Image 1 (cartoon, helix red, strand yellow):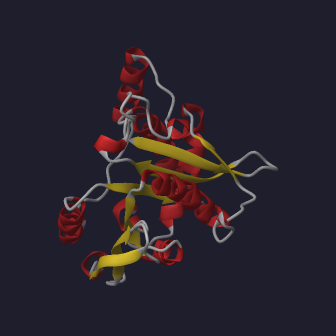
Image 2: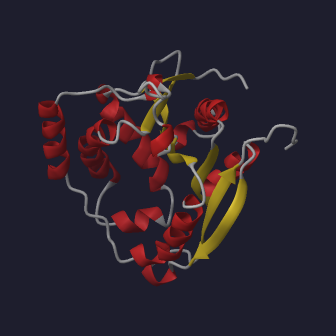
Length: 237
């Protein structure tokens, strides 16, 4: 699957561009935005930009980050974060798996400052709807306990750049790694992403419709826990 988009590692210098890409991608989700009605999008972006460096420097052993870049403008147009199983993140000799997607290592002093700045940012979502996800998270925990999965933790493409193959390019990059490692892949999907994931061969393991109408939502929030299973030798998909 060829793509015009460049898939590259993420650096700390990308933090502001990541916030400007990621937050609008979720802001048009009528359920997600209910948690942020007391904040403007521009303010939320400014605060998330302060928090993203912490995401990049923590859990480096397992997390892998990639960005999609427009080859003409050089602008960041998409982002994906993956998580490897703890026991599969390094080779037997200690070499990291998929090192090109690891965020740069920083000193202890730099990490402490990054964490200090992140903790000072405003991050105050309305938590009254959190209980709606309890059943989903319980089922997710149950599925992940069965075996080791590579996780797609986060996939975001700015609304202005959606339906251009950017999400697919980021997916393809991670799925190629999963295939090389022989790892099945797990995704906690929202309705907008289900079609893309199905095109990559994912199936719905469990789904549900959450009712957020009591909080001003549509009352029909579809979520799906999806799995991609690698081909076994001698089998056909």
